[in-house]
Length: 326
Image 1 (tube, helix red, strand yellow):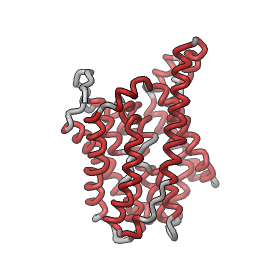
Image 2 (cartoon, one colour):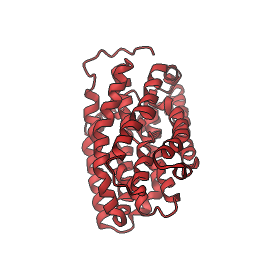
Image 3 (tube, helix red, strand yellow):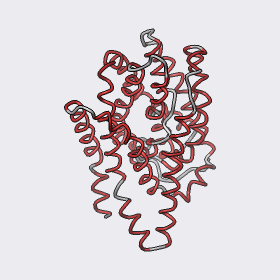
Image 4 (cartoon, helix red, strand yellow):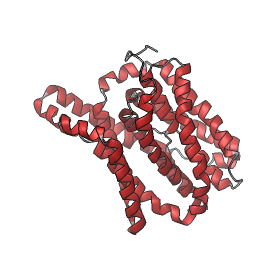
């Protein structure tokens, strides 16, 4: 099993790229792949469950005590990134729907698959996992404030709490509890250990499944609003290039060790698109433009994550593997 796992991890970027290409081709050639949207959350939950199994959950208590990391994470996502987004918004056309979509997605840090990608990208995923409640609460509180500042009070009223809470319960809390139970079982019995070993092979296939399902489900949604989607692509590409560098820079300012700094880089670059997408469908008169704007960011981000997994591990690669207390 260890040989299979090592082979999958060594070839993971090729596997993910293949999943993206195949999904895009199927979405282009086969009608009705939007039906896969109902499977997105299930695929995400599976991916996060097998990812959490690879994270020593007994260490989460120590991760909660990492005050310096949490401070760097919050400064990055709720101070520095909003400034970057404010600059980008000025480069967009004055179309309020375009601006709303970009603000929705770029102002909300990811609370789910960022844990998986950071784990695969040699970042300290335990710290991100321990920080998800803070990220969730602050984005629910601050997103209406940011929207009100950029677009006015009417835009602030569009934010609903339901999708955020639903995502945290089903994509973080439930998989986390199940992973903890399996880890306890594995520590107490041979059968549990064997099950955990088999499940340990699944992070790469489960991530490929998520990429396939998401791409196949969302690509057809771009068709009716392709003009608006193409307008925001340069903004999303620029964000994907700059955000991880900004996150890494903030981590350096807070004197975090390399793995923690990489986690900040992943968090800065990875947004909560799959969680805010239901908000887009709830906005009167927003379909199809607003969902398409958010879906476009998902596509750019997923492709970017494949690059991050190759490049971000090089950040601080020469540093000694000693964790600093913070």
